[in-house]
Length: 53
Length: 242
Image 1: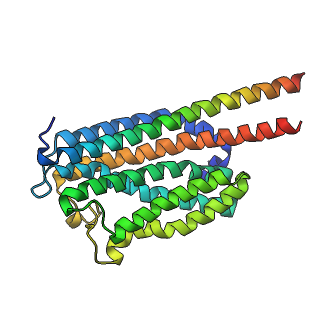
Image 2: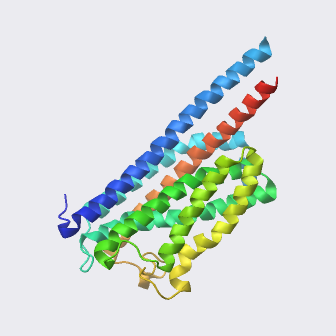
Image 3: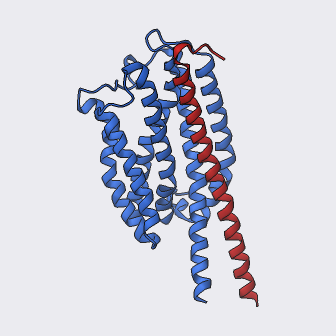
């Protein structure tokens, strides 16, 4: 860990908040992507079943 | 193969699925190398002390905040002129990324400003135009959610995007338009005289590449999601009618 001197609070808070926001955005985007993909798959399967019956 | 063929949602999704693992890998590599290099292996500045390390997140996030809106402007224009749904959905997909980057730029700027300028905030032209840009991002996302008809929402948000572009431009050039305010000039420039010292410059370039790749990766992922969500909505409506 580098010696950040009297500014350690400012530097560490900046990095902490930034990384938290980026991780949050990535995880939210990924989870929504998975949820929508599953929903679409289910709907397409339901549609195919309706068409064949 | 023409660029416009990617306006086909199926072709776009195929491309996104192929590119995503690679772009995600390059993003992780650039961000890890850039941030570790900048945080652990660069010296303190003789005036700013260790707060100079904030540059590796503040400058790239501000760059993406402005250029995300520029990308939304171009894709909105494509929607208005050529009516390609993928372009409207790409603009929608980019907005939360741009908004997050604006928050990061505002936050890291404020936290750097306190020890260096002696204030968290100043109604300086660049800071103020950045705050207005953030409000435009919020308004843009709220408008997409508020209008039920997707094509109408795309039209209205595209017009809002055109108007907001003025503030995106102001955020970028405010320092030059008004020769006043606390915010200094560009840290990165093609003109080498205005650049930061090499010891800060190279890790900053790697961080910038990492943030650009993060933006590309998230736009691809989120646009693919928006296309699928649109298809799911169309299917639900069709099945509801049947």
